[in-house]
Length: 175
Image (cartoon, rainbow, N blue to C red; front, side):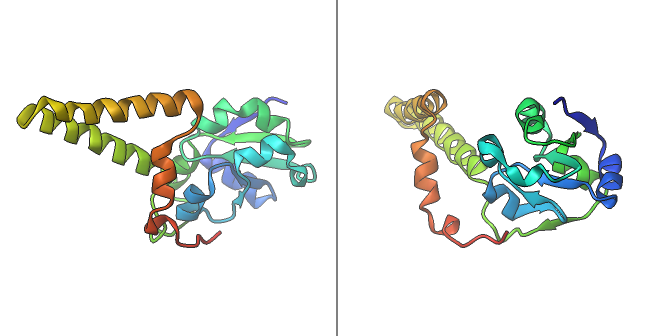
């Protein structure tokens, strides 16, 4: 099934008529901020077959910006038997339209953003120290870059695993 795009205004109207909003993001992203009436079903569960969607007449999928839902539209379309839609611009567009969201900024940043911040900071630090103190510090930047390439190829990110064990990421999340 092909998914059609809906503007936030059209999605809100469909939702008021009983459409099911489905947030496909990871739990850490959902816990930090989500559309007030959205049901959280991560993309991984939908790929495995989310039988609970087969009863819904209309399903509107969304992520943060709309990119993940557009890229996964074919897989998402296979998980619905009724009408399926993608929210244009995702959560960001929903908020920009002034519709309600639930935010819990006491939840940690999404793990992917933490990895980007940590890796970027180590690369900058290695470059600055390598320029100012000793070229040996450039090895830090090279090591982090090689780790990112390895993570992209293998799907295993050691930095993400390390960050998951940090105290701020161990707090129980609210769903």
